[in-house]
Image (cartoon, rainbow, N blue to C red):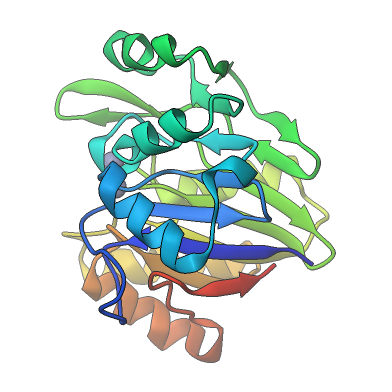
Amino acid sequence: MMKLQVVFNNEVDDSKFAVGWGLSCLVGEDFLFDTGESPDYLEHNMEILGIDPAQLKTVMISHDHWDHTGGLWYILEQNPNIELVICTGFSEEFKKQVKPYGIKIREVENFSQIGDNFWSTGPMVSNYSGDLLQEQSLVVKTDRGIALITGCSHPGIDNILEKVVEQFPSDPFYLAVGGFHLVNHQRSELLMICSKFKELKVQKVAPTHCTGQDAQNVFEEIYQENYLTAETGKIFEI
Ligand SMILES: [Zn+2]
Ligand SMILES: [Zn+2]
């Protein structure tokens, strides 16, 4: 069993946490997935949750968007020993900003193992405001099965699920958590996406961040007690 904790999210139900736009989760004790929108917010929430930047070994950034990269500078200033896991296609500007910190940078090219029981889906591409955007999602394997953690799911949450199941066809799919990016979808489309989750036997879902309220409602309706919220501070046992 492993602990997955939401460190920053735009969904908050306790006013002691900083709230803004974005997502950040701690997986186990030393792996941070995304960093939210700002260094100050990340620092504030990590302090409250008792997470020391020095305990981190790896920071994975799903995609090069401000609401996922914004807190990174706090970690880089506090801990020059981390390995940063990004996609090959992140902007040159981002890579240039990171370089002076002298950290190890791993640029992921395909579906690949990035730690004990940790995998990256590798860059999946979507068209974002006329540009090609690369995004990777995190897959963690525990006794309970597979847990998928997504940033914004710009490549399509259904495509991401399929890629994960293709790689781990015989493992139970325990949990999918993160931004599913389903705003401006019709109810019929949302129901189709939900049935894809069911077809691929995803046991529990925690759609959050940029998923959209309508989509969250549909997931809750379909998944019932297996629909979980993911507000800041929330701990999932995976
Ligand atoms: Zn986002
Ligand atoms: Zn995004």
